[in-house]
Length: 421
Image (tube, rainbow, N blue to C red):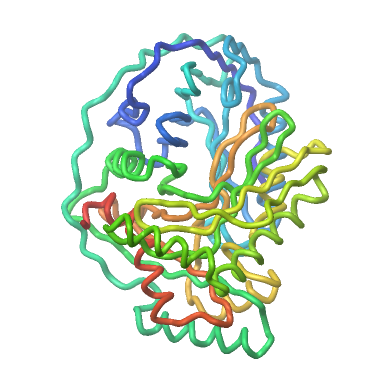
């Protein structure tokens, strides 16, 4: 069970607009005590650890949500800005599987700097009885690039993973399951410690239209918003169906048109959209699901994408909404229980917090939670190593070699961030 919720004192004040939020992250704080949530230059960064909680098992979401509610209920807050993400904020990452040894963590930083449109702010959070003073916020020296990493096999090598894909296709064609998402991991090891700030600089710069995140040593650039709750409006971006980009814009346009017509990818996408709409239905009214997806262009791949929206009708926090959506068909499959069993049988690894919810929540329950994709987990015992992940949706028409190529494309953001160009 989580420890008793502490009483916090939080103070939010306006701040002159910083040029680069990542540059504000200090170079003398442990990587696990740096947090980031950025898209197109706006968002949140934080450092230090005013308090945190770790939970595990099937109730990890409910336990974390209850702990945060108790923290906020007894905290003293002075917020001169009053925007989503001001006041006390908790950043979280949650394991994909209930039984995972990696569990879940909510971290409340000591300092959070935010930027939203033309407004910037700093929040200082402490335990105690007096309001904290506003800290000095200034850029720090640029992080050093790591040496080009050496990549080694994770749980399964390429041939073993293709064999797992073939087995999954056979299970689908046999009627055991409609869709299953299979992931693979790769270990990247550098000659010296990896500076988390370098990874964030590369990801935020190279993949600006994704959500660049760092929470408790998990870092990545996710294109998939699991759920956003803001002032009663709930939105979710669903991605399923992928094609790798080339360096030729004209060719990419032809590939995008091909993706939009692909029966295999449209089938995979339909399963994912349906799972999200069904999960949100008990919490929302006026759910809007577009009739057809659009093609989302990212630097390395293109995805079929659909934005689902609804109006919240209960008191569910953004974290509890994320719980209701996890795991979606986009990262597990459908039907969910059958797909989860196939994953357990074929992947031969604990995904950890890969493909689990990652994001933030403020005292009102508003927040944003992405699916932890295009990401890696820092090795707590070996600071030179990062475990990176990629997964693919498998349906009856999937080809193992093509799925392997897709997984390689999805590994590129983290490989590029590590200097493996």
